[in-house]
Image (tube, one colour):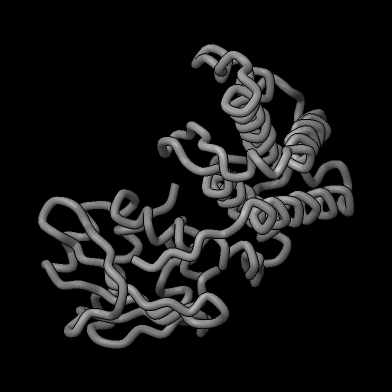
Length: 270
């Protein structure tokens, strides 16, 4: 499958943009903003920000272990970081998030070029640093949207971030797709036609036990979805239901449109 791998600097620049977007958003609102509802049903804004702050610290510790030979972070160490952030008062979360993320970015900025493609252990296995950093970009891109979208219901993901993330999101579709939704396809494949700067066409095959993805559109799809990368990524993450995207004109579905509701079961979000 075609897969244009982004460079370390491209991903780092996107991470910095997402960080600055959230900083500017939080600091432009009253302090009570962090206690407002986020898109995530069970989280206020400060809880989303807490998740990003603990994630930045854990990711930095994994880099220091892989690249500097420091002791790996144990499961108990991760629990301690999560516990620290969970124990903060709502108004104390943002400064700690900002501190941890600035430290992560400073570490990455100072990293010698010889380490820009080093292998990093992650929850998804051992990955080259740019791809490992994409996992942080994915978290930040979606969760920054989660914080902001209540104030701006028409908000979209950053297009540059979406372009960088698309190959990884597509690669992970077979593991993300839920069986109960796939079964509603009755063995028929569906096509995705990603338009815009990240133009790409691919097929999602439901399979009998596990889904698979291949380049190109299917010859006889159950239906085909045409949409930009950022909307596709929000759909896969449960943040852009296909019926909403069609109504808004963000997506066009051709073929058996009555079956498109299966996408909400295939990709319910997380």
